[in-house]
Length: 194
Image 1 (tube, rainbow, N blue to C red):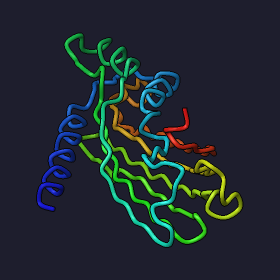
Image 2 (cartoon, one colour):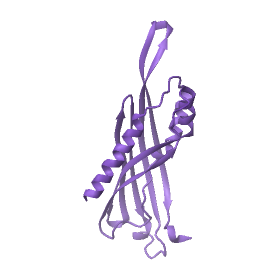
Image 3 (tube, rainbow, N blue to C red):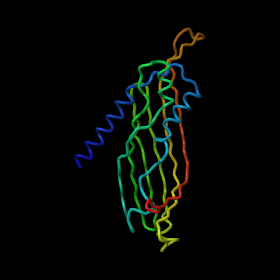
Image 4 (cartoon, rainbow, N blue to C red):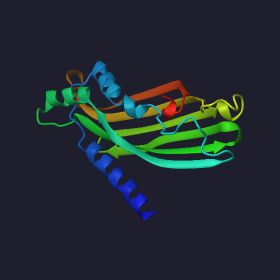
């Protein structure tokens, strides 16, 4: 248990430390912001690690910590325009995932990254999903597990930027906010099918 908690805090610190190196984006426009959000799309989408089978025949519960690196070529391009020595070709991510299986093959899932706030940059994401394993009820006796999953994820990214505006005779601090929502459906088959 202590090892799991230590791992969680280490990953949180690594993620926060990486975000603390807030990239210098002095001249970003809407198209550039959309490119950066595209880079983060792997983090935005709900992606559980479970198979088509429920976690138990009556009840099951699972919790996990999912982490990795997201390739960010657009963020790297933008930051290198302002600072050629910057290094944002990959950004680490961390997500907490939980699942609860109920009778009749129904499973609820959640994945989230609590708000990360470093200097002038904030990011958070929350994903919910429902999975129904058809072979637990409707297709009982089918030779492989088969499930349908529907999911939705809401992610928010914001940062502060100083805008030099001649009409106000000085610098204006602005907060740039971007919100992204993804909905989807999946047909889930077991990995040993092929």
